[in-house]
Image: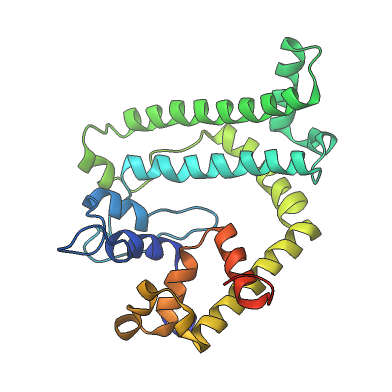
Length: 259
């Protein structure tokens, strides 16, 4: 989509709720309130960049709710990816021993649970990591609200700093963990092979639909005159789950698969 307007995760989210979802006869979209729509475009993380949209207060900081969602997203991804890494065997518990945050959790667990089976130990590790980060986030955010004397919704929006943040100590603990996940998990050769395979699947689906748009469902075909073939195909693929995308690939390219 690089030459056809590109693709942005946040803008696509807004496009889904404002245009692609059709729930009512009088207008497109699902009629979400302004604040939720603003939160969608201002979502930011290590992988998502906030975008500025006219009419959605581009000059203002996100609401507290949006800031909470942003960091909750990070906590969930980091800890569930760690869970997946341990479960898959790509990460061993011994690999974690050099991490300060792991040392802190491990010492607490050793004091309370002298004997615990590996499965429950893994669950307890992830639970403890999430609890530790959420508790710190709540405490630091309460401090920031008091520090900046925030009393209203508008006062949050006018503040030049994010209010929902970790403490400096927690940031220092999280940084090595995130670097560890990048090195040991996201850059693992098996993960890279899988992500590269996924890219090939998506690219082949895209090209096949663009070349023969008659293969698209009628709902997607109806948008072609207004949106163009590339954008209509992009919308269709962006709305797929992993499983649905794999099934579509099989239907299009496996001669023995029912279409």
